[in-house]
Image 1: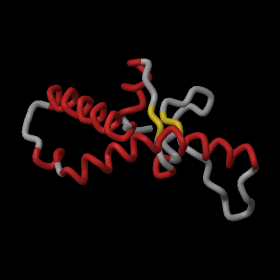
Image 2: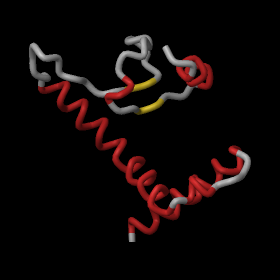
Image 3: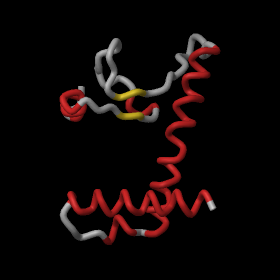
Length: 103
């Protein structure tokens, strides 16, 4: 289990992650980090597992697009401020990006 799992659980938060986060040792009955399903070599994914992966990808897509925009703008690499201030700045940038994308 990573160090972030107890912190997220204590704060009552969760996270959506890609398949790279599989095997963190999180509680399977009450996951903090939600990941998709990976097909083992011996069998294919079931229909419900494919649907779960599709639903997770649908929820994660806007966030991935937002981070891609930030990388294109190279804002995060030039940011030299307190992390608490950076959080507010990044939230404002995501809002502006979403407003621009909705136009």
